[in-house]
Length: 260
Image (cartoon, rainbow, N blue to C red; front, side):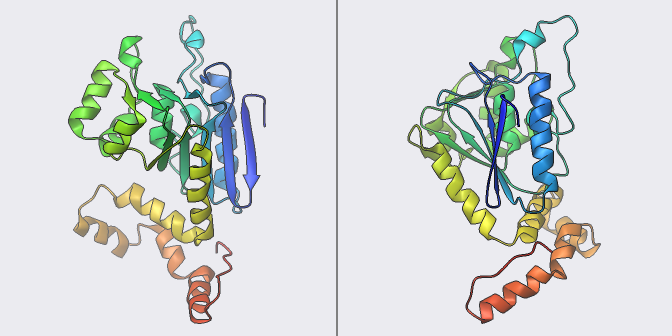
């Protein structure tokens, strides 16, 4: 797509690689390119799951390009999807896997938090450095961090900018897997292939429910469903894929999904 944002399609899997030497920082123009890539992913019915990673084996992303931050009038137009393409793409109902392959800093950490599943190489380091450079995290990153970490640990990271390595992140269940250096994409692709093999509408409905009712009580979630407030779930109920899944099970064969 560009020299700073590479995309690759592998069947139903869409891979986005940030390649902005030397530390994979994201300025406004790069963010808009990432946003365009994820808009393509969102809108293409053949694409079912995305993997986001950084080029090389040292940096996933070091966040906002502070060269731009030091300008008199910084460009804050990060694109329709927000910083990094997905931080504010509220209508994205397809899963995104972050393959963290090194330093995951500030806005880069926030970008990883916006993904649905995180895998990291053993050399990954996570920290929110904003308070140490006179900035703040984006507001959506606060509930995302509190959702993934114990409250006290999350507040410590936010208030101090201290570093968390991959093993600690795994202990706190913030990430799904830790891999040897150089193998994080293998793990990400393994998970992506499992997602891509599932019924695409069903996966989208699950993500919709996580977004819309994941924070509610059981009773409130049931009320959402009863009142037809989960449109993708309703679509699944009457879908061709729903019938295909049942037929394939009875006929002892693999289903052929149409996404409708």
